Every structure is written in C-alpha cells, then in structure tokens.
Length: 106
Image (cartoon, rainbow, N blue to C red):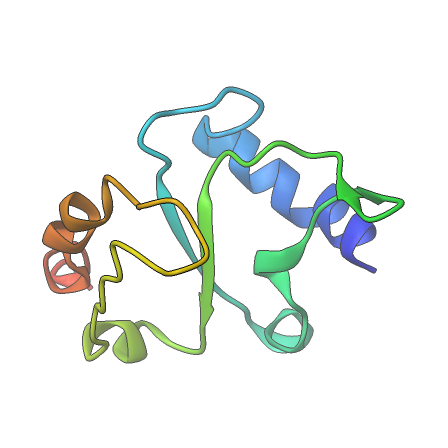
C-alpha cells in the first residue's frame, strides 16, 4: 500500500511543489491533511521499500494532521540531542519557523 500511495499521490504532489526528485537543504516540512479515504492512510510514510530499505530518497520532512486548526494550536518540541543518534544541527532553526506564522493566512 505504501508504494501505491507514493506513486498515486505523494510523488506527484512533491514533484508539483518542486521538492522531488531534487534535494533541498534544509529539508522543507510538509504537513499532510487527508480528506475522505486519504485521512485513513499513512500519507507521510509513503515510499518504495525493497527488502527493508527505502528506495526513495528523503526530500521533505513529512507529518500528518487532521485539520489546519490542529496545526494552529500545536506545540513545537525540539530535541536537538538524543543518546542514540547524532545531533540535529538545524532543529532550533526549524523550531523558530513555528506553525503559527505559517498558518496565519488560513
């Protein structure tokens, strides 16, 4: 299902936005808001997998939410370091963008 979802929807949207197949640094954030049957599908996890590996390179940071209002009242929690992974150097920059500013036009 994830491969079908990638080919049928996600890849086309990212291509139209100019985020695929090229990589952008820092990666842009995409918030998916599914409507109808798409609300039940893991849009943010769509990709092509082969034997436990992802064949599609990461071109965006993807998340899902149910409504734009949910985003408007969301909290942004930044975790720049963890015990088991390398530090996230751009996390504070991304946290500074915030969702409130981006959603002010809705």
